[in-house]
Image 1: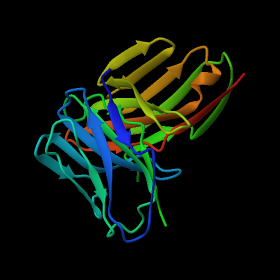
Image 2 (image 1 turned 135 degrees about the vertical axis):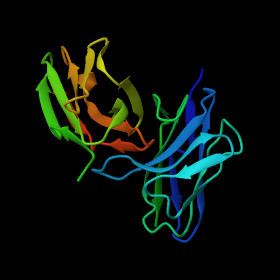
Image 3 (image 1 turned 180 degrees about the horizontal axis):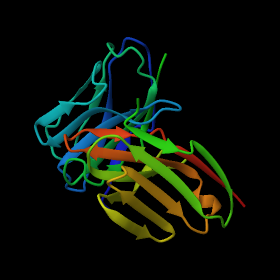
Image 4 (image 1 turned 90 degrees about the vertical axis):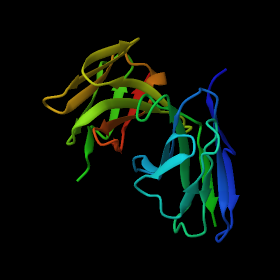
Length: 112
Length: 108
């Protein structure tokens, strides 16, 4: 079955550690996105990638980094520079930039 | 000021009622999306539209480009429709804006 997967579902880290969230899709989509969601707030775009080996900062990229070495994969690293990393992180993909997006199940990151 | 405003923020309905959720936006758009987020957090894309009206089962989405307004209608609502409904717009500059969502609860 085609789809988009994120792992793990829940992630716990100590403050000061970098952590990498996985996002994989087998939909043959060119575009991929990372969003952050905080309680009571809308989704906010962290990074997006229109095509392999290319990515652009979204609205809240500070403290995050990404790579897009393969079409299927778009991992997000939450660095120790991110001041409030505890949040729900969602990955999505679409056939082209800002077409209908397919979302992964999300990773809930807690940093203490 | 938010580029995308949704109303109402919260909505409670009895099973079987007709439901309308509204979305107004302030930017020029290439497309508008309606998304559904269930309590577990997963998000499903319901509609992408740039003009007119689309229908899928009991869900209908309309958009008025001149008035910068879209509505999502649910006919014969059911408890399984309980979710957060999110309006999002892609503007002509390849930026994406999300509303904060409408939380719908349908009571049996």
